[in-house]
Image (tube, rainbow, N blue to C red; front, side, top):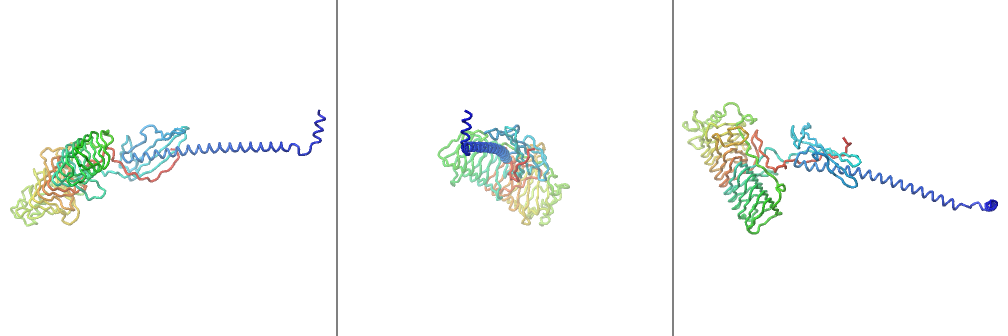
Length: 523
């Protein structure tokens, strides 16, 4: 057998077995290519998985930052979520994220944030640091710096603030010439009776009462009411009774033809005495949380604190200074020696511009000045009296009455501010009509002529009648506005007094401008 094999091999030609060798070589190359392909696929899969995981974590962290942006528009979060972390990615692995927020004032000083409240200053910037963590423990961190601009200007307050109730009738109008400034009429407690050619070019908020509208009463902005709303007549001019949306945590009743420009949103029901026109949606029976929330703010207390009036002349006896001011003007006007305004021992509580008294105008001091007439039971200006201002002026009074075309004008053509304040005599943090203080009432003529701005304040009643026109703000216990009255809203406030915001609860946030957003190393 072995001899046969040797013979066969000996007889074989030199290329015997080459096909087998080639086949084996091809198989080896194929195997090597397969191994390479598998290795490449495995590497690519691993790289893709890492990129996907990284992208998921980065996008999750970025999404957390975006969530904080939204929260900053209405609140001041110290952390999101308040505790723990939130699921920000679910497939194929769970990713969880959270963010810390640090606040700084305009000078870059760090502020304290706890429980959603920032203390130590007014936030001007915030740094949001968000971290996303995958199931395998890997993390990515995004950081963003934002500039914060308050959406509410604290201290501006409403055009009209009535602590108890408000009566608007017979051609009353409230408006504003200020750009991008909303007019708000606020009724803190009590009902609103709006009738007879009344126009509010802005919003009306009735924080703890109801609203009745009739006879061409019109609100061009939003109407918010705690209690029932009744619109008993469509606007006689075919106009919208409410130009914006109507919100009430109660029921509403409307007569045929009533027009609402926006939505009607009620926690109660809507009764229609015929077809009405609504520019938006009608939603009834909603939860209270689904509409803006307002709460009573109470009339801010204003007491006699001259030191609050920085830049004003406040030294010495301010009652004597007032009397001296009136007498010097009377003398300059050539008043009769027997006139009450000339009486050196008089009180000058009542001043008339007529020839029998002052015989001309009261020209104001050249520098901001505070006068005190609280020794008078009533400060009374009448019969053509014209106060010509050359600078800002404030009168603290027990009560005030003007009649006979009393005017406040500018002596030099420049804008000046004029305050009439009935100060609360009991400094306990609550505005009270007690202790001998009283009302502010204006009859028969214009009170303030542009460019003069006036602020009237009393815990009692503000009562305007007979063609009163003024630019400024009115804050009173009860406010009665009737018989051609025009209020042009110009916010000047009261020094030392924080006027309550007219924004809904939780809406006093910030405009958020992104300075940068970037990935950083995990802290």
